[in-house]
Length: 112
Image (tube, rainbow, N blue to C red; front, side, top):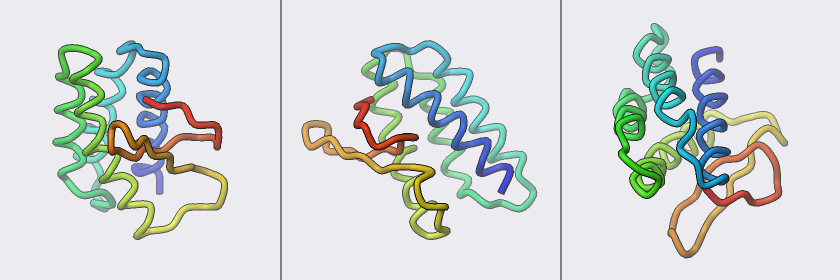
């Protein structure tokens, strides 16, 4: 599960930056997601995840990054729901204002 694992490590860094109202590290971590997905010989994650990560990496500002984060989050949530994950490893949160869900590492909601 190494390729998928590295994707989620980078994803959680992005989520944390967005929750801090920052774009620091977003482009680099999104590029790492894209590279991991494209380089995965087992094709664990759908190739659209790489495209979604590329869109996030090219976001010009915080608002654009938040919008690009939504489809990436949906795809990764879908992957976990289909493939399972050890309990307590990721938590899904939802914002009714943004009408979007995301994953985070703990239960305390940190809205990206």
